[in-house]
Length: 112
Image (cartoon, rainbow, N blue to C red; front, top):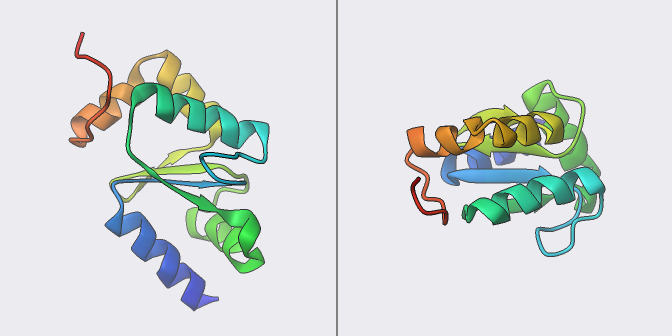
């Protein structure tokens, strides 16, 4: 299982924003993944979507990696942000936008 942990660690470290999700950004296969995709797309954030449904080791591996039992999982600059509920609450409170700003992640929204 360490091989999958190394792969996940590399993905999280080498991509500024990574969403481990069910399905793809173009075709989410669960409502929770779809909600996070909608938020990221609304913010105009460039991110990598990783479909955990393609590999059972990956699906379990990401849960072990984060000690978080649900999918989707959002990582920003190597740090675990949270799942759907947390991402949605942070977005509604403008906290997610602040995380991106603090980490130097470009969003497509005009500065207010």
